Amino acid sequence: MFVWSTPRLWSVVLLSVVAAGASPAPVSACDYGYMALPQVFDASTDVFVGTVTESRFSRGVDGQLIVRSRPTEDVPTVRFKVLTPYKGAAGDEVILSEDLSDCTFPFLQGATYMIHAFMSDGRLISGQASRPILISLPDGSRAQRDPSEPATYWSPELAMAYADARAHQRPHAFITGRVFLIGRDGVTASTPVSDDVVVYAERAGAPPAVVRVPNTPSNIFEMVLSPGEYRFIVRRAGTQLGDAVTLRVADGESRTVNLGPGWSR
Image (cartoon, rainbow, N blue to C red):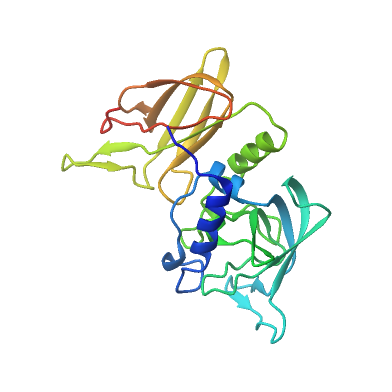
């Protein structure tokens, strides 16, 4: 079972990692360690879905990133039209200040994101450290998974389901874990991204919850479920791998469920 840190502590962690990078995002040097949705939600003062109405970052017709130079006087800002507020985010607009580190996240003008934002030195900021999730591109098309863009690896549906449950105090439980497989050399390893692996959470009298593995950039799967008893099964190309795991989860609980023939509980 996870024991989640307090919001204040995670605010400090978020502030620390925002300042720790050494090259422009999104690149591996600015890929931060995994933080689950409950941690990021608790550490954030503002959680919302919004469309960028003003940013110095955009993409040309060739797909290349276009960056307008920073203003010489003021801290650059990113303006969002708030579509769905979950926490804070009062009003129709939220303005984020850039963190001014080398790992500033390029929020694209016209794109829509799931945002977790927090206060730093009196300014509201967000970025790669706090799990930005790209929902749709400026042309309205759905964002496709891109290895060079971590913001496309998080599941927007899952993040919005979790935020909605928290915002409206709906019963929910959060599950995270890895799928472990035994390779040809007999060594147990976490699931490669290329494998067709799916986790099923089956509950009596209800349709199963299904997620493809991984659904985060850290080769981890996440699920948001109603409280109750579940039978967790992992399948690759329809074939079950390893034994099922039965687990009861309570309202508001966060649990780890590692699966696969290479894993013993």
